[in-house]
Length: 361
Image (cartoon, rainbow, N blue to C red):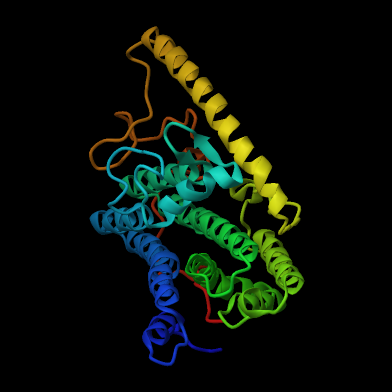
């Protein structure tokens, strides 16, 4: 449809008396729409407003504030000041989703810290953008915003994949637990559908029709039909990964979904090796992490104290006492030092002609 206020419409319809939703579905719809769709758009808006402020010239404080606001919208306050696993601090925004699903998709960066690969990339870009603001390199800031746009879709794909498969494996239509997973899949998909529809309307229709609460995934009679439609949705989603320029390696692979090859399965038996693999992986990963921690501590003690370090100050700028980034273990910081002249800020050019926000489905 052509509804430009589609998120608002979803919220209003969910509260409507004739929505046909159960209380569980309504709760998940409202929370999910705010969590996946509204906050995702809020991040995009803040990032590109920061770019606009930078290009306007003479407004570095405004550009910095808007970029910091985007970071707050990604991470949220529930995460605290120390990085911890999702089970300890289950944040509600995109950062929390990255931690929540990284075990299932094999994309956890470190078992102890609970960080995911996509969050590592997001954090790197946040620091890169903040540094670009501090030196008024508006081109570097705009590049960081563009790359962030792709990264933010990773956790949304993981959410839809995971909740879709979980829904399909529970055959008890009307089960409150099943309704929760189905509503999560539906809500996360709504954030991606405008983007998918722009590239492939047919795939968008397959996803939308099957994830609807009256659609085949939830309402079809017979297990075989539900499995078939679940696979159709999964395949449509995997085809959309590359089309939306999302790194399938950051999404990772679950026992039932290979985001790179496009293989999708609803076989329950595949969850058994997943549980075993997670358990063994946690034990081995924990042991390796402890050994690496001890090794790095010993190694760091022998380093020269004057060696430049990549750290942030209280304002979140990672500069190590210099006006440019130390790019050790941080490839994205090269966007500031390699691709652009840090001494020249871009001229103000009004609106961003290259920014394309999602259109309504």
